Image 1 (cartoon, rainbow, N blue to C red):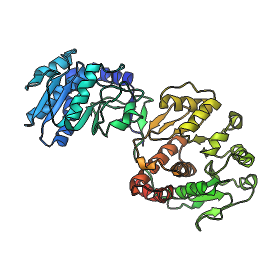
Image 2: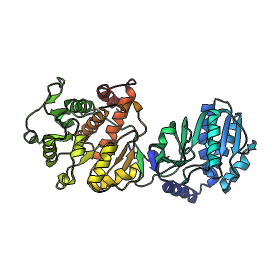
Image 3: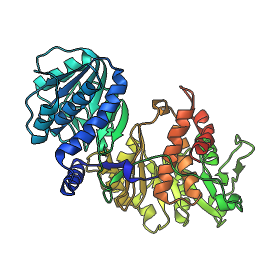
Image 4: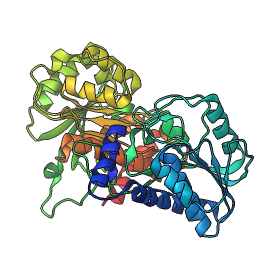
Length: 465
């Protein structure tokens, strides 16, 4: 599931990757031709032969723009180039010299089908000047469609933050060489539209973050039975609906046996319910994983159930109320794997509890919390980051915004816990659960409920086979 082609690189890692290619004999000009002509393919498809305007900046991102413009001109397309300023790098100057069309100045008026933003790329660390911001806004407003090359101008690549206010929204962003964190982190990724990648041959970087991709799921083995496929206990509590949602999701995500460990008067006929005292229930050594949190409550009884669950050497997923009740002392003697699935508020509470509330990007925060707590952290939201204590990091592509409804987090927790019960490594189980959650949302009709989402998890699993 985690592949070299899905790596996410920092600006420094990307620069090192390009330098390695150059040292191996691929010149800067050749790399620019590969990147620019690959991006031109996407621009050409979007334009359908209608007028294209390319805005070129002074650096190599601007050089990519000249290559794109020449590739479109060679195909017979109508293309205008507007140079915000003269090229400042040798490669950009060479690319401009190879463009056989006219280059207009920044005051030129242009309109058409597609605006291509090649003003600044991933290396930008300061806000756009007032003149550059106005130029980007004017050209974006005068074209029907907008394409950003590598990144929209004015975005911090490593943190996913806009460096300037009122940046335009784009229909398509074409990443060059590798994904950057801004392609997957809010708020920047919200304005990037569809995402496409043009490889340029950058090698795999050891320890690089990855984009979560479709997992390689499988059918049960020929000799499988319910316990071999994994027994999952969903520890319920005061709010039965949440634990039922999680259990329904877990049933569709691969575990062979899901038990609701609570009062389950409203449970479906195919969900086994065990309302006996939790300490007694967990003497069964066949439990492969536990899910604690959805519907647990926050009173003394809930705290006791969490303590009992964590005292057992059983891999577990902690969500919702369990994260609010969690204290470092509860993990002091624990060695079995833990996965935590906090939303933003819960993430902040955990950071304070574990003494790592130092700020930073969402990636930095999740990574620090994972290291401090020993848990795999799934920092969920419109941008989801998964971090492991050993430094592994994965980010999820943007999922359906219809997931912003009550109960969908319970469905996510159930899917992750099911993969954990099935024997999957905790970090991979988190990645697979996030993918199943997103795929289930894709399969739902708009304005779906959490219950409808949970029912689609089994169809999402089938899509991963």
